[in-house]
Length: 101
Image (tube, rainbow, N blue to C red):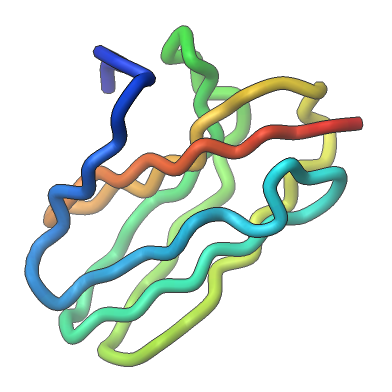
């Protein structure tokens, strides 16, 4: 995973998969992200710094068709700008999250 630019974010998700923005953002505690899918997939979630370092592995999610909300525990992560990243065999998705302690 390499960050090439931080000026533009475009989703390159397969048809039938959608993710919302991270909320709340900036965050003091946990954050959530809504998503919906018409496909089955598994993805690993992690917090990554803009230098590409994995800050915290959040675990994996197994998705079946429907609408869901993923909750991420950001405890132990210092204030700053990070990426909440979901990696699956179908896609890699990154959403910026700002932690404000």
